[in-house]
Length: 376
Ligand SMILES: Cc1ncc(COP(=O)(O)O)c(C=O)c1O
Image (cartoon, rainbow, N blue to C red; front, side, top):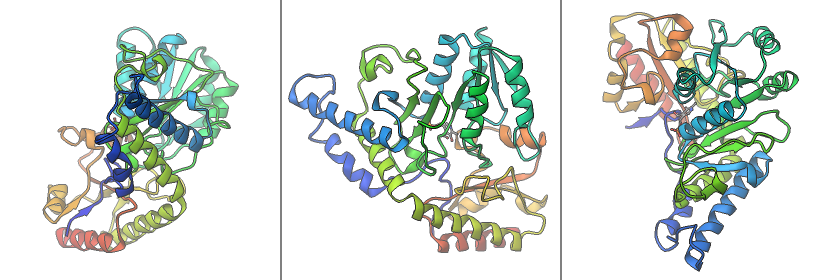
């Protein structure tokens, strides 16, 4: 049996999405910038996809820009906001995704801004009083806080943080890669400037994402060249990717309620099973709290034991795919920067299980059985 429990890294393509993409991989191959009928067909598919995404988020199509994924959307948003609005301070946390942290470090080392790291509780939450104090103290500020943490699942309330930013006239960027397709958004109501999504996290294809840029916060492009995406993102568009992204969004929001209920049950079963199996097991961050963490992520810390040795490898041998942290960092020797930020350098074995709509209860039970066998 093969069990894929790494849906925060990427998700399997939905067959409905694959079907929607096929014509654009075959007969509908025109370059959207061409003015002939082949080109117009592709252009119209892109604009229809843009409308779908905008409709789901309650924004205007002109505020949606397609990118190569979440990383590029983070880079474009942060570079754009910092440079266009002469941002003096960026308030963020050490547990953001590297697409945010490395971009901000780059901007700081180029002398364009300064980073201020908020303190975190042992569960990885920010202290809201500290954020308010810092917002009062500074001018030209950008707040960059991720909506759902990809490793420990912590959620923030976008409306609440947005309101704080509004009161203090700060810009607000949120990496919403892990929540897009899993939670509803009404961006007309939220004070936020840039938000993003990456299709492969919600059963769409890899290499395609989008950013929402509020019409009050126009930013310059990051990738320069032709005039695609209304001069905001040069390069011939990934037409089949864009079509797949919009289809995946449509399905995710069509089936959101039922998928959420199903995935929550899987996470709950895993939590209860692990607690019964492993005395002293802990759940990192807020991931043990269903109301305050992604229903798709469970970050597990195992009590010290020789049997934890190469635990991910042992699970892999039994056909179970999980992760130690984010997929992007899994080849690195250093532990996860997120877990380290919570606990300091730690040797504790961490496993991130992340669940998706195609997982079944039988798969969770199989994973629990194998965990039991490995850990004795
Ligand atoms: C929170 C978060 N931000 C950004 C990214 C990067 O997205 P992409 O893989 O589309 O570049 C990821 C993917 O791992 C993520 O989990």
